[in-house]
Image (tube, rainbow, N blue to C red; front, side, top):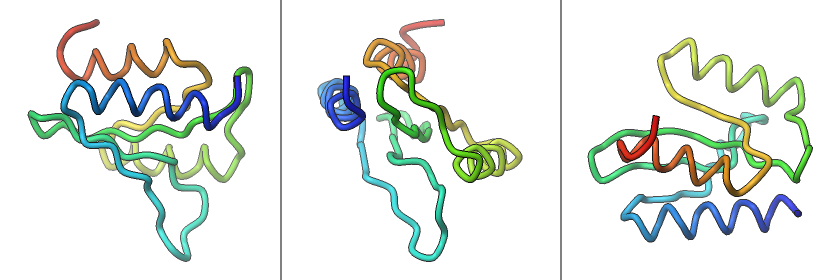
Length: 95
């Protein structure tokens, strides 16, 4: 499955649950995750989407680690079920 297909499916699911889903860009700052999600309860998390089996680049991993060091949740997702599960966890529906 292509990255854009996974991203669309996860974003559509998140939006159906009332989550804001923004394409995240930071001009002059490469490697930031693709999407920022904000739950109705105010929880924020980021996802870097990859095609099935795809891996984040070293630059993307560095940016995700920088977010983690600031206590921000950020993930790399390469399939729809993984993304849907993250959405459910942030809504308090999963573990």
